[in-house]
Image (cartoon, rainbow, N blue to C red; front, side):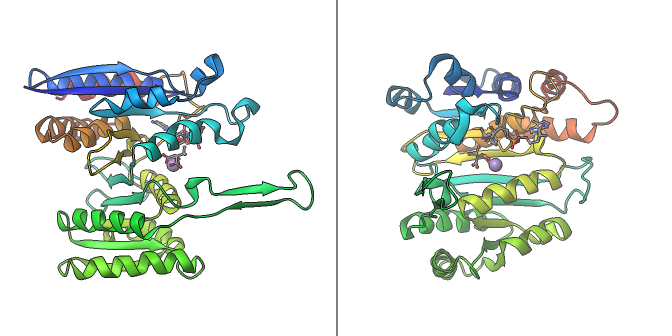
Length: 346
Ligand code: NAD
Ligand code: IPM
Ligand code: MN
């Protein structure tokens, strides 16, 4: 039998509510086919406020020893001055993505049959955003001077390396080869001309190695139009870290809700554990009320199982989610009820 050694970071807010549902569903789907051990780590804003610790080098080393990481969401009350400056987002979430070289941020979107989406019909939406995960404006390459004065200057410089863009683009074309063989580069080459030229050149070069993949280009603003008016045109979207962040919340919204959107932070080389998490955050507005939809967290375990080469339990969970989604109607259910319903379909 296979075995999975999983690190679990529930995090904050609804992360702590959806992650137990995901872990329980993972266990149920694996049944006797695989042994799973889970180790819980307390990291997050709440833990930081209690202990002063965000994520130490020792913590990183401990996490590195696991096969994979399942994360709920991190981040606290945005008005809390002790959490200002994205201290948790940068010190924990981005630190994990950077330290474990999660250069592929994989965010699939699909409208399942029966799902009521405000905009689109099932079948119209089945695409995956291959978002760069370790570069762009996320690297913290900037600064501020004369803070608080009328002469303040603040910069965030977007970092784009040929190495980083090339490996992401290669991965995106490989994904397209296994899908409908259509790839769209999304950028803002009309304004961000330096990075735009690099991305365009590397996509064009990779496209020559994949003559069967049709590719096109959209400016990010136009991409938001077509995601709403004609999402069927998308198969694989390859884009930078910030555009990918924004487009995938939109993708969640058009596909039936952000509570359904799953993601994987992938280190394709396998040198480090990959990390799976819902696209959404800690949702302070509904935290502690058992209102959060755990489906995104549960679907993140599907990506996890696929990544670990265990497609059978992955398909079982996916099918159970699909059945549950097809039958959704009536009163909203609690987080636990949705988890129970999905597990009852396994
Ligand atoms: P959010 O995703 O937490 O919430 C946005 C809206 O979506 C809210 O109205 C929320 O109630 C709703 N929502 C989110 N998940 C839901 C679910 N599973 N079921 C039902 N409704 C859901 O985004 P935000 O409010 O911008 O961010 C809150 C905090 O989370 C911030 O601290 C932010 O930095 C952090 N965050 C963390 C992650 C992560 O850990 N990966 C991702 C995004 C945001
Ligand atoms: C996400 C989140 C993160 C991001 C934040 C919390 C740093 O919004 O995973 O989508 O921007 O990548
Ligand atoms: Mn986001």
